[in-house]
Image (cartoon, rainbow, N blue to C red; front, top):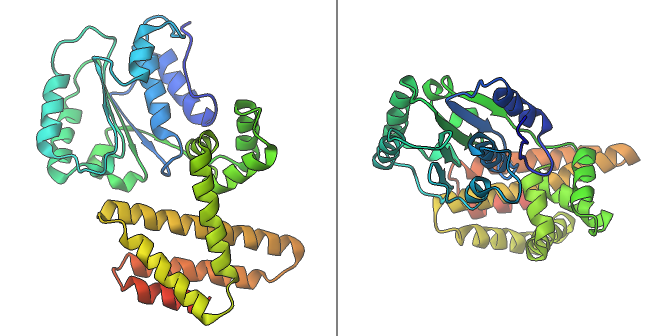
Length: 314
């Protein structure tokens, strides 16, 4: 049996499903990996592509695996998320390419964040999915099933990815980073909200870890601020930071990251209050307030007024 090549840890259930497809020679023409951002979906997709293309089981000396790892394999196409929409012309050109003769086991097209497909691009893709091309495999990732039209999703094998439990991720990270202090690993897991891809990046880069730690320290200062002028200043700083994101996509990413950080801290406060018998009602009220503010900001209400109202009534 061929040796399989998978990420060092995480998503054992999802990998088992893909292993079964390989073992039973039951590879679908199209896969959709669904789950939160930075959870490791595209890493698993790339590993699946290696397992599909590898002629001998891989290893350090496998030329095919190395080419896929470096994203320069002739019959494995990577469309990473660059923030740009995927238009019909580009998709049609790729489909024409997929129809050409090839010598590899498969011709594979990996698309990160398939929500970027325009309506025209989705329609062009649908036509191809309705008339499968032999030995061509589509592997797409998305945050939500609803990011793609139902007609496309119905023709894909959907595999759902989830945040890993704290203890599972801690055990895996300790084995992967034996030199890292336990306290830092636990902190990285809290920052990453159970997302193995994000936890790996935090522990791989001292700079990224420091930036994330600074975010949490700033939020903790906001939560502990008692004077009105302090809260108003914090509101202005948050608006200024969001305003630096000059594109809608970047703005949404920054907003989502901010609220993920805030809600992670507030849920920690809630757990501690429940354990210690503290004021859990305050933590619940703050969580509800942040959800309302997030909803208001996504309705394009005035950012400064939303944050001022949030922090003045915090």
